Length: 52
Image (cartoon, rainbow, N blue to C red; front, side, top):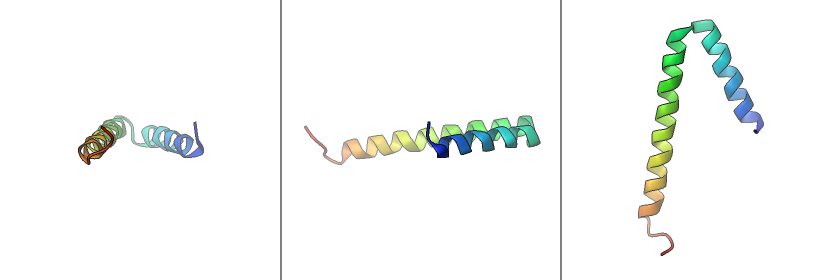
């Protein structure tokens, strides 16, 4: 676990503590968006004509 991951987790916990359940919903959406971006990047790199 690197320092940036620790900072992200601590920030998420603090935001959840301050804003409550609304923050949890926003964090879930942000996580889902990050996953979608990662998956689309994987698909894009596979279509680029990599190794065969």
